[in-house]
Image (tube, rainbow, N blue to C red; front, side, top):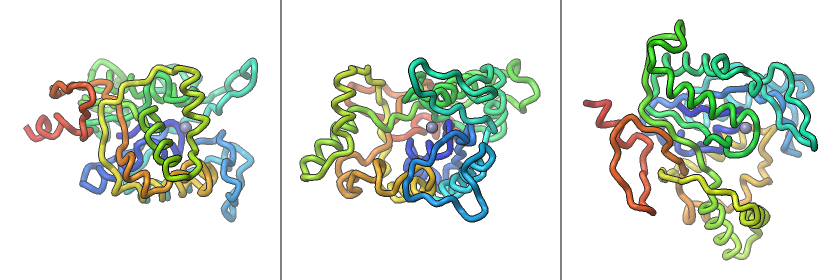
Length: 295
Ligand SMILES: [Zn+2]
């Protein structure tokens, strides 16, 4: 179960890994907390589909549902909405208040309940989400972490969230880390080494300047064969992803050579796992799970 804040996040974080696991026969469910109703049009070549509009909350929700269905098809996964409303990314100084009724303002137990219900229905062994900082400071990404962590902790407890189905205890919880400094630096240097303009120049400089502490990456899942699925899923989010923009700025053959993985941090495990030396990585989100489940 891959839990994400908005439609398109499943295509930019861990997308190739979900496509790979789905292709290998794992049942994969993407859960999307909000409808992405406050996303602006970020693709200059985007044209609103015939019969749709992008002005109102309802209009954006409808367009983004259409895009999400295409992305899920490209990844070969099932997808489910939790039904919360996008909080938007507040900008300005001072920051404006969050809009009434948005996901980030829903109290934790109320916000986590539909996810606990989804966990008890779908019964995942592994859940992926974002780290406590959200990965980047969008209030919905932080809330996505909070509800996922809560659901991982509570779904197996018969005393919590009564009326949401039979308890189910997931075995591992991971955080997505698609933009670790190791990856950014490796790709940046390879792109520049090939005499091309890197999309990560400013990024490397500003991250160095801000000295943001890195989250530990524990797991590198080889996924290069599923980059085409990821790219098709990204492109499906036509209102958000510019096919001439950032996400497509790194030549794909170079990416396959330099960084053929999706990266994760193992946050919680209820199965025993081998000790690893620094620099050694787990390669499978289901390590320790397959034997446990078959037993
Ligand atoms: Zn998002």
